[in-house]
Amino acid sequence: MNLMSQPKGNNAQIRPFNERLILDLVRRNSELSKAEIARASKLSAQSATVIVNRLVEEGMLKAGKSVRGKVGQPSTPYRLDPLGAVSVGIKVGRRSAEVTTMALDYSIIEHRSLRYDYPVYNTLRDDLINLTKTLISELPLEKSKSLQGVGLAIPDALWSWETATGAPQGAMAEWEHANLREDLEIALNAPVAEMNDANAACLASLRLGGGRNLSSFVYFYVGTFIGGGLAFGDQVFEGLAGNAGAIGSLPTHLSGERKTNQLLDYASIHILEDAMTAAGFDVNSLYSGQLIPEAKDLFAEWQTKAADAIAFAAMGGQVFIDPEGIILDTSLSPPLRQGLVAATNAALNEYDQRGISKVEVIPCEVGIHARSLGSALLPYQMLLPVEG
Image 1 (cartoon, rainbow, N blue to C red):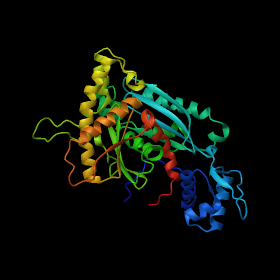
Image 2 (spheres, helix red, strand yellow):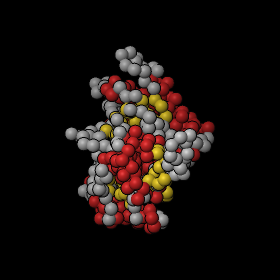
Image 3 (spheres, helix red, strand yellow):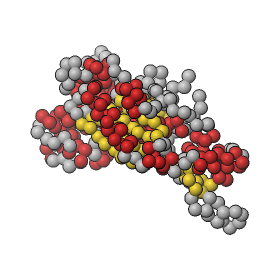
Image 4 (tube, rainbow, N blue to C red):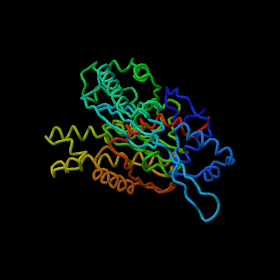
C-alpha cells in the first residue's frame, strides 16, 4: 500500500515513467544535454534522444544555445519550457483563501487572495470559481491550452472549527456535506487534486524550501492554526487516512496531570491575533514585522509558550521518525520567524536528549504563501518519476 502523497481526485493522464524521470532530472539540474540525461537516467543514448525530442515537440522542454567543447560535437543543453504547462492552486483556510497560477518551472504567474471572518460555503465556492476562471482567462493563449490541472489545499473537517473561528452557530455547517473538489471540477472542467492544507505546505517546503536537500523531515507550519507534515524519500507521507503529521492535535501534557490541551492551543497565531486585537494593536504588524514595543511584549509572551510546545512536539518527532531534519515555517514576518526558531531551539536545549540524535529546528523561508504554493504544486506531482 502506497501512503505517500496521493492527493485525492486527480484524474489527469500520467506520462510514461521515463518521460517523468527526464523532466524531473532537468528540473533538478536546471539544464542537461542529451548525453547527460542518458547517463543520469541510465537510458540508452538512443532512448534518451527519442524522449527528449518528443518532450521538445510537445513544448515541455526547450533547447538552449549549443556549447562547443574542446573535442567532439557541440553539446546542446535542454531546460524546462515554462510555457509547457500551467497549474492552478486553490488554498482554503479558516480566515483566508488564495488562488495561484504556476508555470512548469514552478515560477508564479499570478496570485490573488480573499479575506473573510469565517468561510461560508456557497459564497466562498462561487468566489473561488469566478476568481480561478478570471486567472485562467488572463493566461497567454499557449499557457491556457496546457493546463496541467488544479490543486486544492484545505483543512480537514473545516466545519468543526466553527467555534475557533468565531463563526455563528451553524454558519459553517454546510461544509460537512459539501464537496468542494467535485464542485470545482464541474465548474472548471479540469481535474482537481486535493490535499490537507498543512501537507500542502509541507510539499512546498519539499519542492521550494528547506526540504529540497533532505531525505526525510518533520515539518511544522505555524499559521492561524498550527499544522504540519512528514516527508520521506522526496514525497509527503500522508498515512492511511491522510492525517500523518497532524501535529496540531498532539497533546502537550500527560492526561493525569491536568487538562490535556493540544499543540494548537499554544502555538497557533489566532491566539496571538486575539490578544493583540483585545489590546488594540494592529494584527497586520505580525506579517509586516513592524511591531510597536507594547506589541513586542505580547508577542514575546506568546512566543515563549509556542516555542516550548513546538519543542515538546519536535522531541516526539525525533524519537519516532529520526528524520534528517526538523523544519519550521510560519506566516509570520521573517524577523518574527527567526525569533520563533531561535526560541524553539532554546527550549529544545532544556530537554534531555540522551539516546537520540541532537534535535535542532531549521527555518524554512517559503513563508505565508506555503499552503497556496503547495496547492499549485499538486498537479505537477503527476509529472514526478514515482511508481506504485
